[in-house]
Amino acid sequence: MKRYKFLTIFSLVLLLLSSCNDFIERSPYDQIQDTEYWQNEEQIRIYSYSFYPAYFVGYGATGLIGGSRFGNGDTFNDDIAWRTQGEFTPIRVPDTDSGWDFSYVRKANYMLEKVQTVPGLTEEALNHWTGVSRLLRGMEYSDLTFLYGDVPFFDHRLESTEYDELYKDRDARTYVDKKIMEDFEYALTNIRTNDGEMMINRYVAAALVSRLALREGTFLKYHEIDADLGNQMIDLSRRASLIVMESGKYSISSDYGKLFTSDDLAGNSEVIMYRKYVDGVLTHCTLTYNNAEAQTGANKALLESYVMSDGKPVYVDNPSFCPKTAEDFFKNRDKRLSFTFRNKYYIRGEDCSPFNYSTSGYSMHKFMNDADTASTDLKFRNANNVTDAPCLRYAEVLLNYAEACYELGKLTQADLDKSINLLRARAGIPALQTLGGQPGVNGTVYDDPHRDPDVPSLLWEIRRERRVEMAFEGLRYNDLKRWKKFEYMYNEKNPDIKLGAYISYDDYPKANKTEVPFESSGATEGYILCNTGAARQAPKDYNYVRPVPKDQITLYENNGYKLHQTKEWIGTGLE
Image (cartoon, rainbow, N blue to C red):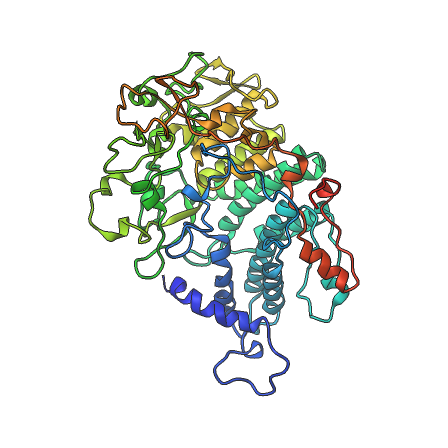
């Protein structure tokens, strides 16, 4: 906890260290100078803290949900039923873009440089901190390439006089990906297996590589950029997942709910890294959204993705699946459905106490223990929430592993049993089987009639598990992006994303009929029509990669250099 209290203050000092001023002739008495720092291992560790809030965001900063990838910080995807859908962003080449930022690349390179100069480090310590530095650089470049594709790669801290390097053009995405893989491979080999509580260790690194290498590898594959390199990165994800899986340190928690509603995740067997929140020090407002505020509700498509208790998708044995009440809808389903949503519809205009209404009727409570609703403790109100955030879960590693095995053509029943089926067991549903390469349960093959026909049936089930297990944990948008499936966010292609629960006005006589309309005008029952605005445009290739902002193009030109625009944006008329 002391580390987090200390972090904000010391980060300011570190910013001064990385931007020393040549015009100061005498060292200030009240500042730590670069030449005075980097004297021992503890100082390296303290510097590394400045990366943690950027890469382990959790539920966001004090009092704000901004930046969080959990709960209502994870809504730009095909899981939420928006009243009016915004277009894919940006809609044109922007003047500026804060994402085109290499400050954390510089910080990582600076750390990497200074680690080599610390006196008295053992070879093991030097290799560990070199590994941490390279992991951080690889993580930052993973995000940059996922945003922009081609980006300039810098392998050292640049001085202000290195114009040719400072203004170098973009390197090919595949070149940068190879550099990322080199950094990740080094990190997985050299980072310590234990460096203290809540510190980056080999298993934290492996969980991150499991996520990021799969993300980039599948992007390369499905966007037809470089299938061979894509498979190399997918295999790196598989191997990184195994480092975590074979460590014996982690297991699936028996209580799904406590992963998101606990004030203390220390010792939870499923949590690989978490962010700590403490009253008066660091708080958030994620569970308040689940408790007191009106919700922009989840959609029919998401809730129907949760299978029946027999392990089969809802439409397999019942092609006309359409329960008319909440009781029937939630009956005999994957337990994760009830862990994530309340088993009652909360309709605008009705008395929804002690909670609030949901625009779709489906009320999320994944991050709120409803037993605490009546508590007068202020930690359950407003921006005073102190539940810890599970930044890296073992469950995700298992999902990454299963998907990677499938993508490599290596998936076996044993792979499913030690990954996805551990999650299904907690959810109270039968194991997923691979029967002649097709999905099955209890020896019977099935095929979801609502499956995307372009996705093989077994892969569809693997992706389904990921969607429901990790719902509202910040992965869905990136998943659609890497699979080249933004079409799922397009109403014309996927009409169920604009619908909510099936209700009858007779059951909800106080419902605000203007705000709770049905698909058919004049109907008295049906699925709530949440999206009454225009459908967003169908996704284009340029929606999957950001353009370079205009100010950067101009900056290069003003200094006599050329920075090329993202090729997918050239000729679109949006420049």
